[in-house]
Amino acid sequence: MRKLTYFIATTVDGFIGAPDGDADFMYAYADQEFLGHLIAEYPETIASAGRAHLGLTDAAPRRFDAVIMGRRTYEPGLKAGMTSPYGHFREQYVVSRSLTAAPAPDVRLISGDIAAHVRELKARDGLGIWLCGGADLAAQLADEIDEYVVKTYPVVVGTGMPMSRTGFGVRELELTGCTAFGGGQVVTSYGVKR
Image (cartoon, rainbow, N blue to C red; front, side, top):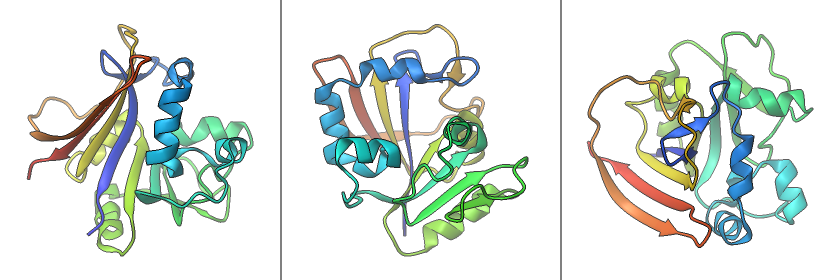
């Protein structure tokens, strides 16, 4: 069975973006060492435009072949003309109640019972499923997330968009990996205890 992994960037105080969701300030912490790690371990999580720039156009996926993102996560790329931000994935899904037609033929829109749809995806053959964001979608899928991979950047912002809007509830995790980098970034992996 495929796993749903919430692979997300956050500040030390647990925010994945500014109050409006903008996370561009985090790019300042993507130094060469850290970027090298992402390229080696998670090449498929780099958007198609970035892959071309980094010479990764033909890089095979290591962990994920499906991506699911919320409309607000998808929207900045869409506004910049990137209708298929992860065209190298076998499956791209955007969760939206407001979009009525997929902006690209290889992007599928989903709505309604998102958790049921994810359970269907998990039952299919393939690599893992990357939950790309954001806080509302993570809350809707809290019971379906099997793994968290948290990229923590060395910055505190005080307020913003949290990792999840789930509300209080204890969900036990098991540490499965931790890698620290010279620039202060840390990638921490946790499996969900069931």
